[in-house]
Image 1 (tube, rainbow, N blue to C red):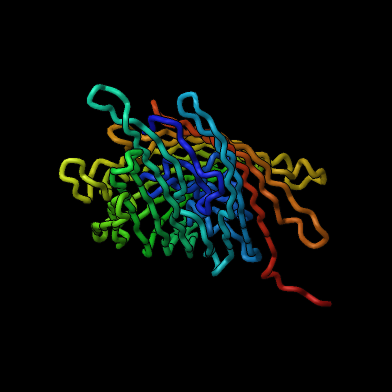
Image 2: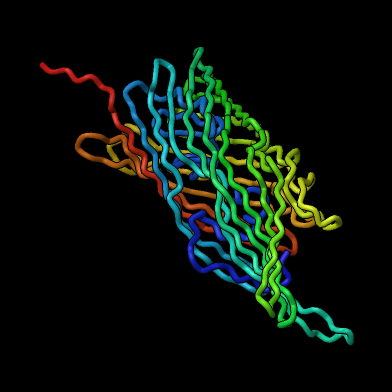
Length: 425
């Protein structure tokens, strides 16, 4: 992808990424798990907890009890180490990630509302090469500069209903919005040569629908098994993809602009997931997820190298497979000892790419995580918790840039008894 040293922007991006891979598709897909799941490798399809929100499967909302209002807010900071050949560099970013509320709406019906990211775009780099002269000598150099910013977010409202003992269904309806601005400029060292810039933009205001189901059953005296399934509805986003090509004469500074527009060019894929979790003695939770995103069915706007026409192209995106496993252990929920009431979490994940770079598949991702759920003790409420987790994500493909990202996630979960009836003697 890059034949020379990559120079990345030194300042933090609002999108919380500096990855050059975010120039492909809809950007770097965001982790949809919240405080609890992030320490467990990102699992969530079969997680069911009445003290922690889980937006990955909206069927889990029905687990909330009738007296509780839960708020979960998260921030993150990350250090990314980039390697290409013998060149290395580090960059830092930080961002406010999400805010989610969970509460009981009706008997056996839980509701959630919040704002979470969908994808992030942020990169700034260049490469320089030389054109060979008539005698094979390196004469004129050209520099390509790549810049991109933006991303997509979703504000959602969801319901989960336990319609029969152990059986729950749910749905999240989201307002999906955002935009991307990407540009590629070509400048030659020859002062008589023209400069060329291509600017790609698109703005999204659409909807997103995600469905979920969970079945919970006792499988022994001390064990509870939960099986979960999710589905996301794929559809076009109604967004126009715009390409503006600007050619500038370096001698006269006169520019000409040519515009191309593809109507209704962007879409999100159908998504399917399945998961299982086991709760042992109300202390140890083991969970595993599998998710399939059908990006291979999605066309993507691209300039055809043969016809030079900006058009929807199939085969640029590919199906994304993700597997995650995780564990959560609390020694003794009722213990007076502080360390016995701390949640200890660990997890791992693996994901295939959803885009191609030229004729090559994009990078694969391998991640591991660990964290704690720390109870916050005060005079009136011992249900609020501070969730801290660390993640390491390795992103790599043959002959491409390697990224090693170390991320710290901090989530504060307020678990308040808002709906209790007070009795006065």
